[in-house]
Amino acid sequence: MNHSYLLIFAILFVSTFIHSTLGFGQALIAMPLLAMVVELKTATPLVAFVLMTIAVVILLRNWHVVDLSIVWRLVLSSCFGIPVGLFLLKGVPEGQMKIFLGILVILFSLFNLTNRYLKMIDLSRVGGGSVLIYLFGFVAGVFGAAYNTSGVVITIYATLRDWAPDRFRSTLQGYFVLTGLLILASHGLAGLWTADVLRLYGTSLPLVLVGIFLGGKLHRFIPEGQFDGYVNVGLLILGCLLFR
Image (cartoon, rainbow, N blue to C red):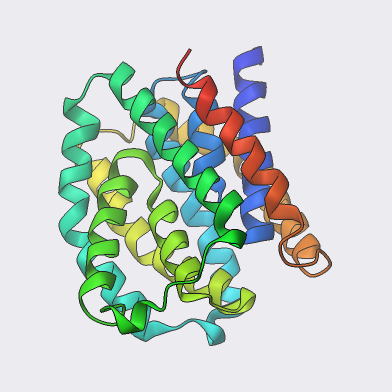
């Protein structure tokens, strides 16, 4: 096994562990790092398979706290954004994609790092239950199909709604499962389910499952707001590296 394969497996394990701990972050961490090792057209469907696996396992454990009234509206609006994201993945040069992804990661990490100093926005008073939720869902669909980073938009939405940790973590997985099915299908129709992608996913699956288990254990013991600060500093660094 060559060094690039070992690096891919390490990236998927670490990103899975962090996602299982926090409820988000797998694609945000894995995509920038994998983009330095393989093409985005390989990294994107591979991360989609792994993210679907994580979301299903977490959802099976915590389905009872998922807010379905939120999930179905986010998923519905994401359906309209997925074709746009797929067009970007297939039609935009990879160099530009990496730069855009870097900007996306940096903005998200800065948002999370400064969020403690920002006044929470009550989205329910400005259309959070009607107009804005569909806007967030549409943009999430675009980013999900193109970069597997729909979690960026949905996490920002959930943060602005100031959800409790359990509701935050589980509702996100409900969204990831439903949109993940659509995104995986779109990748398959676009011819992105290559032999390399399926082989990498199959061989990395045992490590992914271990990462899910360990992250779930850690999630129960780490105080809210302590671990995610370190994660966001790392994301900021990774985003800057994509400009190399």
